Length: 177
Image (tube, rainbow, N blue to C red; front, side, top):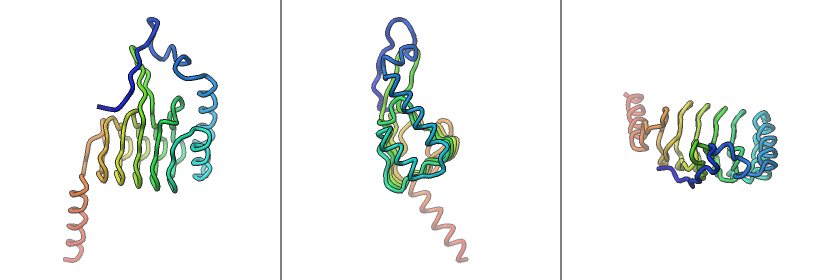
């Protein structure tokens, strides 16, 4: 189960109808402008500066956000990315989800040395462990343990750390034959 805070919709309308009762309009407008600027800039240090300074995201040292990455526009301060991680092209990182009867908010924690493939969507309340690899076009709807290779829609573990080491050893042995 993802770690999210659940808030019921009020007044007989869906939760998105009441969006500005849950997050201030000016915050969303500022975040949107900063995110759009960051999506198109090819300068990784500038993106990290924008994310840390204006969106209050925790971004580790030497972390790289590719072009078109879309952090959560409502609650970007709930996103944390560790050192030396790569977030692939056009990835979406959500810290909120507005549903018919409720909205949910949850922290997204991406560890150190993590690789997220292009066109991946990460849902709120998710933790991706240090050294994990998530393949392109995945829907991350559950936690990913450290050091595994995961992918798919919905995401599943493809190789564990032990299986990856075994494959590397086998390929080394085959190369020495």
